[in-house]
Amino acid sequence: MFNFEKRISEITPNGSYLEDPIKVNNRMTVKDLHTMSINIPWLEIFKATYNDVQMTEETDVIVVSPQVGFPACNSQNKLFEISL
Image 1 (cartoon, rainbow, N blue to C red):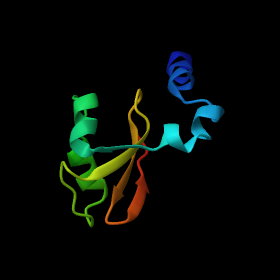
Image 2 (cartoon, rainbow, N blue to C red):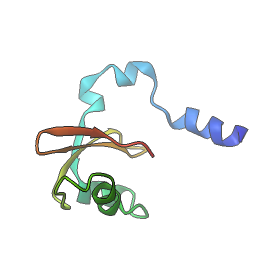
Image 3 (tube, helix red, strand yellow):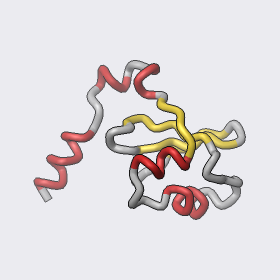
């Protein structure tokens, strides 16, 4: 358990990074996100989580930390935070 928590702290962005809106708002499509993390079926996860929102590979998402891949989905002027 300690190694898991240690790894999470290592990949969590620091406070100064999160305070900079230019660094935090990394807009890309679901397809781009899938290219970054090919083993995660992002479109299927988004569709299952937000079944009332129509999503495609061209739906824009905002990735707070691209090196980790924690997205927030922006579709039809709605902002959703995804917890993994």
